[in-house]
Length: 189
Image 1 (cartoon, rainbow, N blue to C red):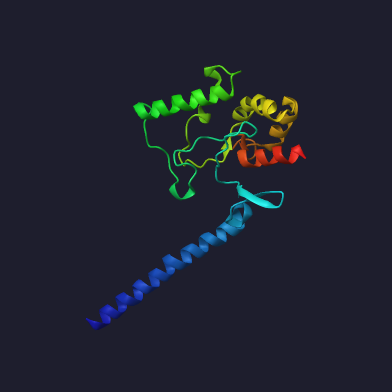
Image 2: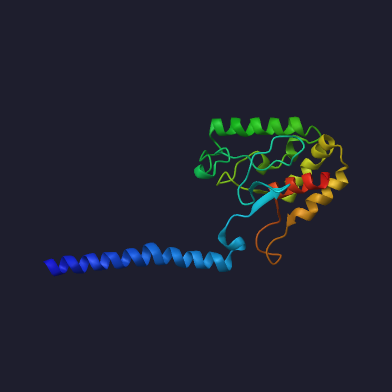
């Protein structure tokens, strides 16, 4: 009985080390080799000050900035998740309708049918840092008016920030909203 108990304790300890430490170490090594920034968040700076992480969405509401996707969790990284409401949920539909009205109020030159769906609905994580180039393009006129800059100058900034699909086929074209807004601020200089 005593030897069985000691044997069980040794096996348990071995598996704790193997699965609890070794597995995490293997994942850490993989992140150091295979992921950008060695598995760490890419911190974005402006004027020498950190303004955010490129892989976590932030809320921008001023007309001088590009807006990202709405968040069902108010951009709280510790509460990542969607609303889990279906498209038939009355509160969800009211929320989307409210976002459409707000978007159109700030973009009066658009028709309702021209509002990109991703600008009024949250992503699954609620922290999506990227928008499609189409979403950036529909905001150019608003930002140009608010900043007193030509639309073509802002469009040029957007086009420099577009990240193409990996190898031209994997994924979709996207624009990181934080990087885009930082590029706008740096262009102001």
